[in-house]
Image (cartoon, rainbow over all chains, first blue to last red; front, top):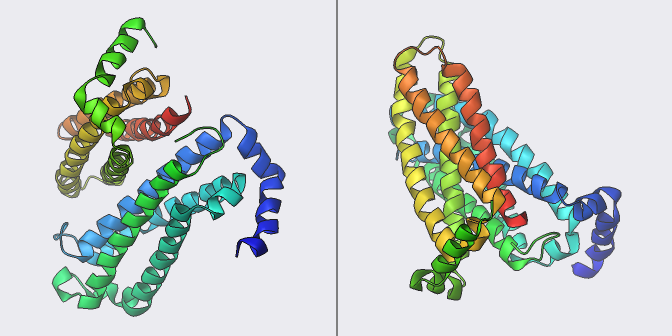
Length: 172
Length: 155
């Protein structure tokens, strides 16, 4: 995989934007700070919704109303994470592509996307009919549990990248 | 701020048995940092939910009070986790934190955000005049906590 991707990864690293991020003393830390903000907001908002689906908390709130309250935060934060994550990646693409923690994180993000798509496909339209969590099908609760586990993994492997990769400016 | 007294304090913390244990055990710092990030996620989303409820209240005080009641618990829970995990990180790497300007700025932001949060909760139950500006101010302060926290690694 590496040999076929290598020219593309090298091209990414050589782009003026990637060079600017890698060589500028403040750009990389600022982008990383926004990335942390985005990822923590995605994680926080998704876990709150999942806890509501599992009937662990916020039982007095209607499921549909509660989910839609966090939908915009989740998407804006996800977009922020995606853009900043992409910028961080291009600054050191080959190292990231060879980092197992980064690859695990990407795999988990794909799993999160698949899990969410299945949930939306099966239960998205029915969500407004369920006032309380007891009416939720077992599979919806399984999906919520998977979601919490997957996003927890995203945070864990995301943080471990910092310990296993030599970044542009620092050792952490 | 890097006074000699502060650096001496860092040195004395560094030589404590607990600090030595953290320094010699490679998994402690990553594990505690991960827990720290979970707590940051919890406090951010809880604070955002509180501010959003106050800003969109439209005089529905009962709804806002319910949100305040529910999410203040999460704020205190995550604060406790942040305090514990942060303390472990400081003990493990005192010079990297206490003597670091980004860390000192983070503490200023954190203290201001906590005062802002406390004043917002107290004030909302009485006059509510300053609630909206306090929401924006405290949100800005929490962003400062996150950003300066990430900058600790680079200063």
